[in-house]
Image: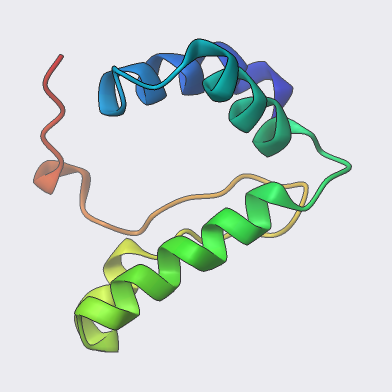
Length: 85
């Protein structure tokens, strides 16, 4: 996870451009810390947000899944993703 620090910082800056840099740094540092639980806590919070808004049949396409210490992924068809910079 630490290898993705810079990539995550770039994404966070795009999504939250007015957030204090020190706060972003702290958040991302916690998420990429392989000894902590912040990543799993955030994944659970994201899953809950989708479940609260959609039924499971639709929401499951957006769940972040994977085993701790391994690669995580989102099963959504990549052709449906549009990322503008």
